[in-house]
Length: 436
Image (tube, rainbow, N blue to C red; front, side):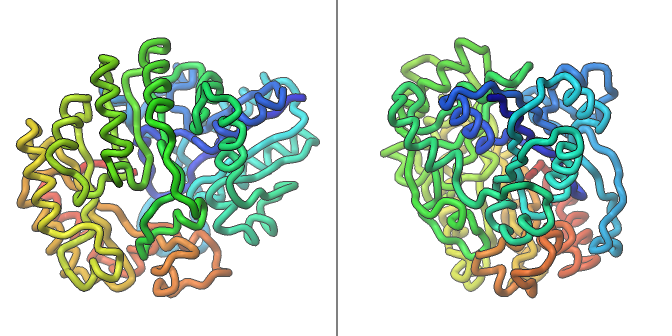
């Protein structure tokens, strides 16, 4: 039996590769390999695929750490976005390259298509349409969009089956405990399907212990469970020393939670094993958990640009959203990082804007406070997530087109010209960095 796995394009107003890989799809690859399948993978977002070698790349296509811009092509805007004064694009490999790669794969018996953010579904739909015209085999759609917008996916995607839930988590959790070599984060085989692997994306836990009002991750993984730190270290050591990978990103939602039980063990293990690499935290870290020892370990292990989450300074807003960060623990986290040897400009801070109850003044106050610390700031525009508390306040309904979840469109419709004013004001206060 042969399976074809496809990670589709992103359709959006903006996209940037912060060491992203389709982890769920790679776990599916491991699962299928265990069942004896032969597997082909086409990742439309793989910026380093050999087939792209002769194509002109955009500026900052790849930085020293291998994050960077995707290839992109302007496409027609959906009717829902006609009033948004931005270009709408397809991010990822060109269509002709995708078709040429399909020409080269052996005919599959089954196809798996992943899906990312809910409003990126046009990319999955486009892939499914092409695949079903070319191969007369079942197509299974899974992932975040398929889970959070299950009924929409069943009705409109064209997939033969829509999987809602955690194939690649619960299923592979069971398998991996039989195969102790892979721990509970089986990425080894999936990453071997990449021709030119530059970085490794990891989640060292599943679920999240928090219930922030704007987040719906717990609807994907209700239980919070960590991978064994020794398994994580074995994986990092394998990719670093056997595959010469020097960049790793942690996509955990609560990486520093109870750090003495997990994160600090990983860091101490990296030191003991003398692993020389760069480690990145694109999902941002909880300031309240970043103590002196954690900051010291991060500096020693090779976290070049710690990324912190900062939701604002208004206490009422923080109480509504989950109160993970206050000005006091943000300042304490900064002090700890500076004392560990970081410069303020090394630190990146995500500031979330556009929450349903948030005002422009609250946003400006948060930006001014963070900018005053000398850090690099990323404006992270809020996206309504189905099933979250804030979704109920967003003005959207469960049955609305998921395109309306788009962060750029939602925040623009809320703040209109104020959005650009916020960004222009920020440019005069602090250097910007990328969120996604």
